[in-house]
Length: 111
Length: 120
Image (tube, rainbow over the protein chains, first blue to last red):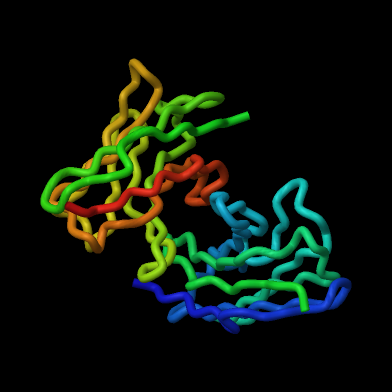
């Protein structure tokens, strides 16, 4: 199985500040023909199912605010919230959807 | 707008069978572009994909290797829904179970979740 390892497990960020979440895959999940990786990011708020935010490591789903962005470098992936809002408090998960394993989650809170 | 409505018992005894159903509205279980998944979430295991069913001229199933001997996912075209059966459950199977649609392996619509506790 491909293992997705997220860091940190939790972080506290002041409103309006940047939040950065990292995710590393145990092997390449690159789709060679489009040069993008099979990596998605989900947001989960308490009592709700996960919500898909980003696909192909960096493509925001329609309707997702542009303060959310994703990037990749080899087997390292990053989700950035450029200016944290109160409604962004949640747990964030990366997932490789080549064969569907998730990271362990990163809890984002307000400092 | 796709909606997935889960139903099923919240308490199952050890060694028995966990059964859940996911009713689909806004799409078809027989869709040639979607697949219909079960995922569970627990503090010890995190988010764990369990399996899926999909129709591409015939029906297919994919299951997590770790559960292959215990899991069955079936479509029900007459009711536009699909089901999960997990046999021989233990307390380790206690989790919130979700159904979800995937398009090209991306889980874009989810059910509301069902907490299933395995306990005598």
